[in-house]
Image (cartoon, rainbow, N blue to C red; front, top):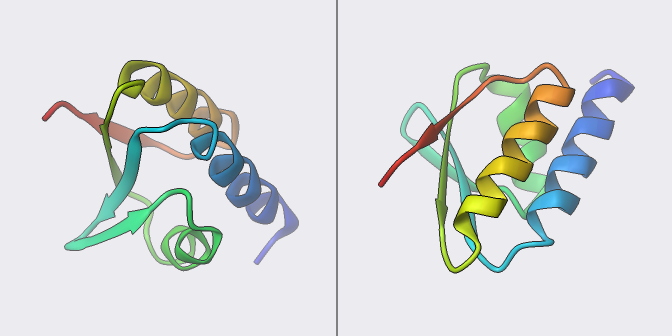
Amino acid sequence: MPNANNAAIVEISQTANKFRSSIVLQYDNKFIDVKSILGLFTTLLTSSNYDLHVHGPDAEDAKKAMSDVFEKHGLKINSIQD
């Protein structure tokens, strides 16, 4: 895996861990806790179409921050409104 992807995974996980909300990345029929670096390594290697689910007290701020960090690394996500 290129080092750029490693940097993206670390920054995504670190950003997610700043929030109390649950932040889950969905691809196909799999759900990965974005706060888990191991889960991200597997996910970002195998998929390019992601749905982001955020639930909790700081969900709006978390959605914005996650969208920014994904965009910074050239990754596209769909923020799901539940």
